[in-house]
Length: 406
Figure: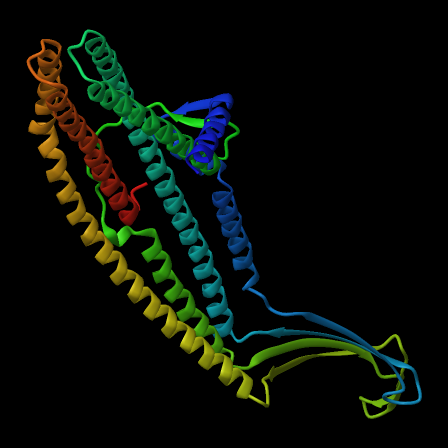
């Protein structure tokens, strides 16, 4: 199984090294993702769709034109041309237009949510790539350190000053470091391909930035895009309920007719004959409403329950985001304290321990056991520092995500 894993890692590395790479900093990789990612493009198209649908809510219904011809007055062939238009009640029409506007705003809020989620994915992936790149540099320095240790142990063994145990220990430490280098290289490649997908690039993404401490984010949880989207969903459902209730109001009917009445008509006290060249006209005004209102009552109740559900969901999302925000702030404070410990004293001590251990071991003042203990202590401090820096930066990115500060 170990052999198979090494083969798999080797194949991944060969693929990674053979592919072209594109160097980007934090800002560049975010902007590239916002410009190229298909999720963003899909959300933008949905926004445009909602804007077009907004125009459809000012719908007056179908215009009707009918022609009636035949013996509807006398045995003469008369004709009647009637134009009618059904118009929603003004309150109904106004509420429908408002619903279209709310839905268009909801699509815009959804677009912002998609942007915020994508930026968070990109930033965290990029930060992990920086961490593993810094980890790689530390591992390479360890490789150099243990290579020197193996060389010194081999010389001591040949001259009789050292033991085979010392030599075997040095070699095993070096092999362990080389294994960790391979594992870390595989992690770097995985993160690069993940960024490649998020950015939708033909090339692997490599980090142009250094792994440094990020500054705390500024912003309010009230600006969280997901929260704003859910609150907008309550506005949409509220307006949809208003539309359904207004549909109990009747539709208005207006029309115009123009027709012939061929025959004798007594209009001036005498019988006058009117042929097909003489036309009569008038207008039509009326209302229309359903005789069976049960279906509309059901639709209105369904909209009411939908609004209540949307309100409950928004309340839950708000409580959840507030809790996540509080936890993220506490996590940041914890990570700031841990990082401060390494920055103010631990890193300096690690450098001193490593320097003194190398000098003492080279001068023969300490044995390999003491040397390894000192080296491991220094390496653990530097490794834990990188981990503390990673956790600190990820905490800041989480706060940026929660406040929508992208």
